[in-house]
Length: 259
Image (cartoon, rainbow, N blue to C red; front, side):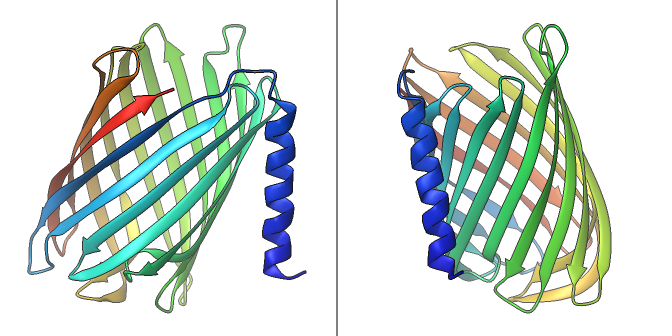
């Protein structure tokens, strides 16, 4: 089957699913923003802008999208990605995502994500997700990864833990990483998130090339999503990242509208 045929089938399936949910009210948001980061060791500072959002029917089908333009490691690129979430049952949903880019060796040429999530408990306050990612770089390497995520909702706090196992080719370089996050949420008022990620990576964008190495990295971030009224608000994130070759710290700021 030709590639256009596969995307045609996906489009028809998505359209049919959305049409079957039209007795519900569609919801979503649109957000536009940008940011900048300082990068050490002569690797060049980052800058960029994005447009992202979602549209769909709660507990039925939801489509998320992201369009991003970025300058990183003294190179420019443009990325486009979509993620379709479909509820198979009220407590089981699947997600399928595709992404591609032009320019920018740091963006994937092709990225495909798939996952299955299960909601647990009488209060439906636990969600487990298992999935896989394929990533084809614009250079000579590609990755296969599997991941697991556990989310627990308690009162106005969301706790999240996850791990990822990645195999990079050529060389079959293997690496583990993990993350944890805590969010404090007040509906239609604010969401404050603290996140930590750490582990090992196998390929490092460096000076316009992809160097096969085995190294550790650490990421800290804090984000605030704040509603100014029922429809409008802003999203602000600060992130600090380090590995043995360079350090990076910077921010993103966006404005969103819910509907």
